[in-house]
Length: 334
Length: 282
View 1 (cartoon, each protein chain N blue to C red):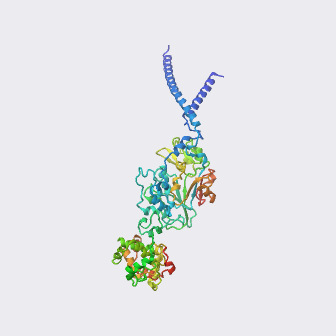
View 2 (cartoon, each protein chain N blue to C red):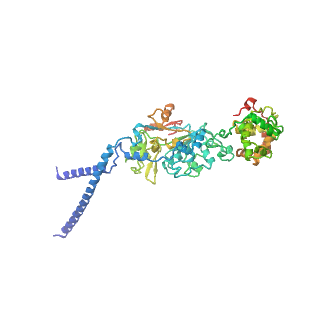
View 3 (cartoon, rainbow over the protein chains, first blue to last red):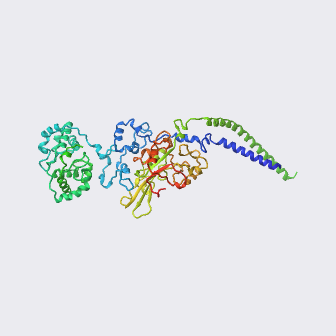
């Protein structure tokens, strides 16, 4: 073989050997262990610390909130969906975010939008809340309004005695008001009565007549009275004859009130008052008081803002003309 | 002697001197190198012999076969998954980098093709006022919508991933438990994989010069947790689990539904299974 060919071949072999050694030397130790990649990188990626900690982590300190949340509709929405990742809490991050703008947060899921499944509860923002924050009415950990219904465990018989002593002179011997300005209480939702009497007692709501009376009531008195009135028959309340006003009121009611108070004034939620067969003068006064801000309720303030005096008269006439439920159902405290 | 001959001799001498110096340097390097090589040999033989579970002491990747399910009939387009993913994985907080994203398909009455937008659509970004938070605007509120739905998307962790096939450095690979990972130390930022992926699942981080994509939160699933997007989804539209376990949520999801994958014609054999999407979704 010619000398220059031998030199060339040996040079190539030397180059090859150097290249192979270099490759062996510079390739990471774990490369090729499982394939054409660096096996150590798998462990490196797996070693990263998770940011989201799951509700079990939150439960260890916030057991009470956890219990409430896990028993209610939002149980599929984990704590960190709204409060942010809990990594570093409480050691480095003392507090997680408590979303201030719930109209922004809640509508991410609950704004009525084409494409959302029908099963998803959705609201049209324009009319639903009257510009209020969602948490005014809804507890995010127990969002269904039924969740805020006051507990009623009163003794109706004791309530009856208290009624005769303190209330009967205005609200009627059988809970049916003798005049147009004071509300009938027979058959009223017990949970609503507990709430509203509590509000008079605490001063959240005030009335020349009611406030002094309510301040003398104990918590058990309130429970007993609510149980007593809820059990009374409202049948004796004479449904007022429908007028032209009532027809106009029906349209207004369907648009503004029916969602909560029911189409005929018997709402599904015991937290809200029944309106069917209620005194029309009382309804007018109450609506005007909400509109003027004398009675404070964010929901009612939003709803009544757009009502004229004539609208209020029509609504009151409509609900006053509705017949209240049969005795058997009215007696039930839901 | 002639003048030219003397000059050439001087040149030859200086050349030989330089060669000598270079050889001396090479020798020095070789000696230190030999020491390094000896260490290297020891390290390599040690790495090859270590056994046990991999990649962590509590997790054996040969026992799992992960898969992902998306139930588009449940998705409400709240984009909590997108924000959670960014937090969990340190994805740049802007409108152009996403490991997972959600598309909205809207068919208006009288139109043949769907109108498609995602959270990075300028009008949806304008709805939050910043590229750091995401929400779908209500642009079809008053439109006559015939049909509309949301489709969450993410890396399909294909059985035959084209991104792995094109990677020149072995920086991206498929693990034994069925997740395609990226080794940022070996990634040279050539972005062949970004182009190879037919789903647009990969993105490039300019600051780091590497590509990135969803890895089903590999650091979570190897700890027995769910991926962050699955965890925060309020309506359980995302399902995750081990197909080796017949009782896992994903096994039940695949068993109890008629599922489909995106772009089956590519032969990539994705491991994300969809329910409730039109053929137009790809």
